Length: 293
Image (cartoon, rainbow, N blue to C red; front, side):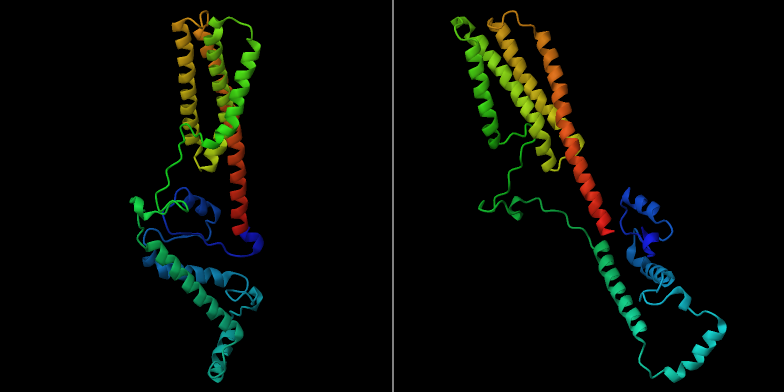
């Protein structure tokens, strides 16, 4: 990009940022300069480097001269030196004024940059009273959102109709059965509701982790921990039914197999969604960085 625009690129490594520093070095190894770890001690070298590089670019800092206009032969230099006393009282050319202005702007920008680089970093306060909560909270600290499980109250708007529908469906299917089958129907409804909640979580949880800025590995293990909670709840229903007899004939091994299949399927769905969202964010960030460059 620098070659196409015919402009110099000068990555300046101020902090020991890895691997970002190594990436900048590979990006423009011809022009880069490192001022880490003591930027102020290398200020003169940095200014000299930038001034030299700007002088080599087309038009220099002012951006008006062309490489062909630079006169470097001895005769021209002698003539200019001879004419210098006569022009001592003349006003500086506009091009030189622009050059001085650009140099002053460069010095000011570099000064601000170096001050920020060497300024001591302040650690974030750990006192709750130093932080402002949500509007109307009276300054109380915001309670962190749970990630295991990442349910919110709004989820009941979607889960409750599903639970009611599952219960109604089971009541219709088992209508006319004996009273002894009531516990079995309740256990079946509980297992189906757990399965529905797991499917809902496979769609909603990755979006929630993404919006909260959780890294992929963190989102993965928290999702697996939440799934383990569903497994423990379902295991309790199965073992309780086997112990009390209302799930007589149920195969616990078969339950584990089905749960494993659902677990793998829901995990694939969840992280396909998370992968799409993360990929979209990466592309957006990449395009934003390209625009900045």
